[in-house]
Image (cartoon, rainbow, N blue to C red; front, side, top):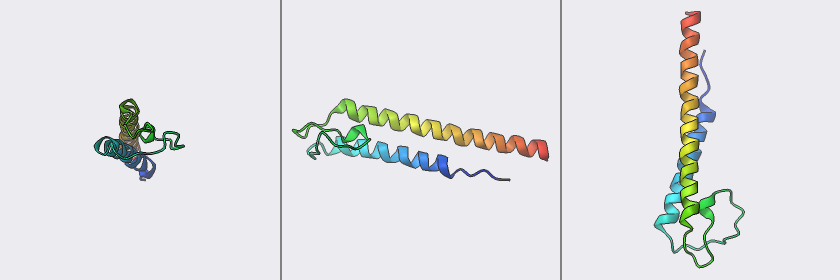
Length: 90
């Protein structure tokens, strides 16, 4: 009996990618994107002058942290449930 951790692991990877994307926005502030982008990532919202909206980047970083922690907790809970099942069924 084994649990499939693939969904939670994919969530961890997605959170990591969001954090990397936010870091890239900060490290390359001269890159100018359309401020009206339809991207779901708040870090993609830049002003028309090409300046980074630090608040949006911080929101993206915080969101990445929350997503990462929630997926990590899901994996921990799955592992605990698997241990409990092994204890019950021997």
